Amino acid sequence: MVEVLAGYSKQAHRKMDRLSTAARALQRLKSGEIRPRASQSERHSRRYRIADRFSSDELVAIGQRYQAGEQSTDLAKEHGIAKSTLLRLLAERGIQTRQRGLTPAKEREILRLRKQGFIIRDIAQRVGCSYDTARKFLLTASNA
Image (tube, rainbow, N blue to C red; front, side, top):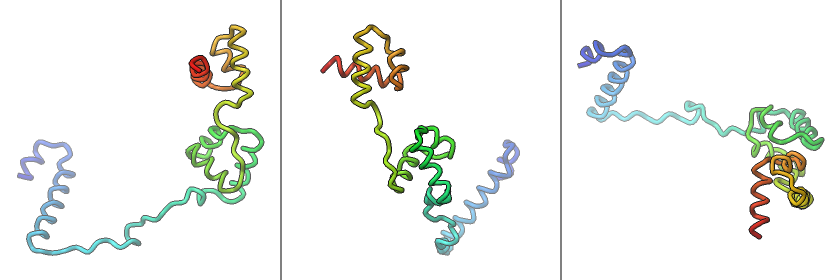
């Protein structure tokens, strides 16, 4: 059967390897042979801490840049980690993270600009938030 399969497949060697592995496993099952599980050291798996990727100097520099006003999203992209991970690393070092979303001052400014007739795109640009953030706030404010 293996030879027939090999004649119809461009990747016959892979399939033949898989079939032989399966045949050996079936043979072990029939004979009652039990293979011991691989030990933890053989599996090469250990818990990976993201903080281990950075030296303490790098973490201090990231914290200083964040406190200087750089956006967490930009810092996370630069270092190849998720934004939530970056915020967690900052919190672990006792760095106060900035408030997410709209502050009360920004909310008042959005309402003021809307009353003056500005469109949402211009409001978002002036306030410094995304279009969707401004739009959603205006929707909830009009329903309240």
